[in-house]
Length: 325
Ligand code: ACO
Image 1 (tube, rainbow, N blue to C red):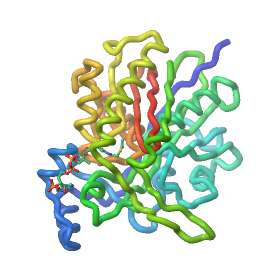
Image 2 (cartoon, rainbow, N blue to C red):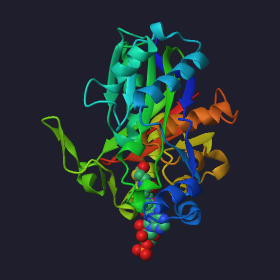
Image 3 (tube, helix red, strand yellow):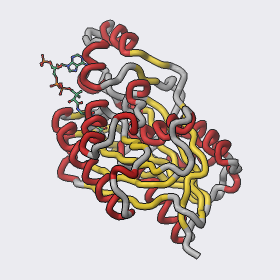
């Protein structure tokens, strides 16, 4: 019998501290950095973001999201045999955030590792979990995107610090005789390293270089739309579907203009797109599972529907997953 993987439950978690654009503008103005609600909304569609408290790590946010996904799936932590955490803001250099989260969750013993593909991290992690389930290497996986991007923002750079937020999203992916994940596409091109990066590194226990995010926003924008469109189309072809079959497009939530352009290229109306960037900002690897869970919990996204998940981020990395919920 052929084995597929299927999402059994979703969950997400946002740290309680929410800053509107006005809140952030007031905080930044106190340090001589000037921005406005109008500028941020017009260029990005972002209205608010959440920032974690200083003692809260990606594993804390991811654990909460995972608990909610387990509850929604009716699965116990002890029955999970694989945990993959997508993050670019791990708790430590090592052990992996997945190991730290596994212990907090009480799922000790199962395989656990991190995936680092920045904003495409969740697409990468979901694809790996799907392949492991299909191969028989796992039966019940937790796939999590968790980030505390506020820790790597340069709050003197108004071109980047207004764009990002913290949060986590998770799914329980389990073996099933019915699909599930229909197709998946992953890509990377390392020649674009310089346009979106955190160039610092740890050597001998010390940070060398600059540990804060650097981005050429216009170069990222131009690349992102074409790459997302290509990945979505390839995933549709692989599954024998067409764009009109998609019930919901759930894209990486970086910028409303990128999201609108992607939907337009697929000839999908914005009524078929889950948008959370206005409330969450860009939460990198957490953004797609956060948007998915928001769609499910608001009753928009329903069992049986066809979902296109797509992401693009630093590396450059990009990809798409087409699935039947
Ligand atoms: N508030 C007010 N003014 C600002 C701000 C701000 N927060 N940031 C920049 N400006 C000013 C600049 O200083 C500049 O002023 P000047 O003309 O006097 O020099 C002006 O606004 C225009 O700056 P640009 O950087 O050219 O603005 P642009 O229109 O390109 O918008 C943005 C910047 C929003 C980053 C845009 O390039 C973009 O959306 N890029 C996509 C990048 C993205 O979404 N990245 C997310 C991470 S990557 C990913 O997740 C895929």
